[in-house]
Image (cartoon, each protein chain N blue to C red):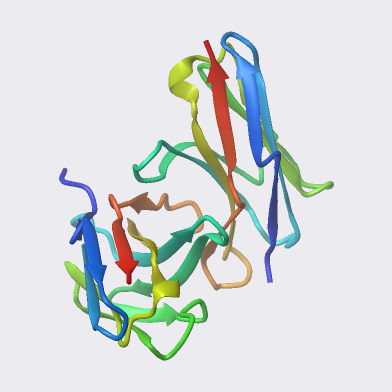
Length: 115
Length: 115
């Protein structure tokens, strides 16, 4: 089955710097990759996603890149702010070809933005 | 839009007791997912339903866990008997359907503590 690895597990950056979180997946049939942000004590919320037919997607300070050949995708946050501090989860969705729909989540990255 | 609703938000119980967690998906959503989140194992998919029918329960850890969805607007996750290792945050999520790009929206979670 699908396996998603996420690195790093913790990341500290200075306010204004960029942060990059990387995920790799094992199932080449995975074709949808959402990213969720979870603030302390709150629910995971979708912040950006990318489909397998797209190499990059950007939304203001957040961007996601996908390399299907290497089976990895990354979240990039530029000009980080204290409110970006949270746990970020990547996920890979199987289903378009297998018929079994699931999100497989990475283990999360705790991002701390230092003021 | 009220979003996904879960109750209770916090549950403290003693080992051996029955625990029932409840979820109301977003109106019009046909798919519902139950997740468990712990520090050690991250976000684990337990079971998911489509049109009130369980599709995949391979993530349910033991026979002590059961889930039902009697109608489109209500689902329960039951643990009987509960054990201390069941302590976790249980999230319910819903999506429009099982199309591979349908976003999953999470509820606020139920924090379960089994003493």
